Length: 337
Image 1 (tube, rainbow, N blue to C red):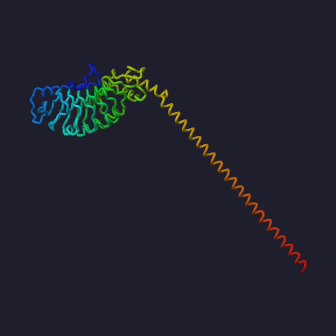
Image 2: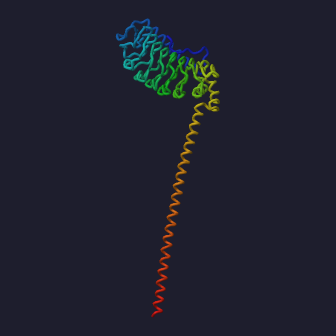
Image 3: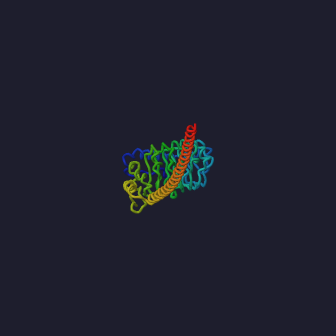
């Protein structure tokens, strides 16, 4: 039974603690599995074609099961259902197993998992979903798994997308393996959000080393000590970077992506130019209309002022004529007297 990826013959020194921990876990699980095979079923609630022991281990591997086993003991601590044809993990049945620590679902026919699938598995530390037919990992799929330490998602040939927040609520995750899938891009924020991450597998994916993957490539370069398979984590496209390690491609992308402009950049400039031209045209038209209206207003005001002045001038002249006539008459009256 394949539990975890085996480290290389001479792992990097800083990976030794992880490698040793993985080896110890694998040895304990092999011993546990061996004990289960040799001992008779002790639990009266053990599912058909499964073996259960007093250590609360339920072994259902390789039993040609087409559905999730029913009547599992509620106190089950380890559940191994690998090498079957199970197409779905029923959330209702699985979430009754609140004490589950270890779950191996590898080599089945699972097409999807979601946040509700693992809604009540707060103690789960090990989860193996490798060798299935998963296509996408949704937002916070593993959010309920507060204690998850090791997650294997390898060898899902149709897995092409992992949501940036898929692991946002898994601060205890130390070992993550997404090797040999169909991933072309991976948002680096989904990895940066894992403070306890010690080992990461990315090899065997058709990585696209374009500008969109610049952050991932640079992160791989900076965090190279976390990779046991960094030498096999290579670009699949474009052609000029095919076969180059992601870390090496990161340095080239940092220069290339900030020196040249892509088609979207040119389109952006064309749109901005058109917007500026249109705005300038509208502004010029509005300014012209305002100026014409202002000139008409000023002209009309000047004409009104001239008219008022003429009226005022005529009134003053009439008054002066009347006063002169009055004075002449008064003078004649005095002479007569």
